Length: 102
Image (tube, rainbow, N blue to C red; front, side, top):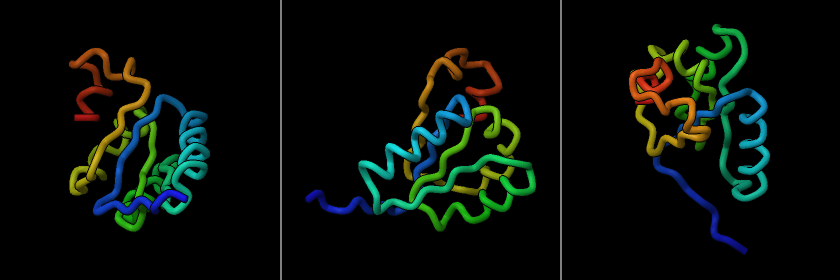
């Protein structure tokens, strides 16, 4: 049996689509079931509330488009690691997605 994974600060993962967010959740549950996961999606007011709660989770997952829309809400948060899946969304370093991910 593997040792549980513990994180000092939340991880932040960016995805290209909502469907991929749910794929990530299933994979995390499969390989690291002890980690708590916060998927950030839905209407803006719900996303803002979820972002406020992000410190209580091990992993926060959102999409590139939602990151762009919510960037100001994330500005005061520090994440241990950022996972940038679907890197074609940030291939252009001057794109809105790339700037938000920075």
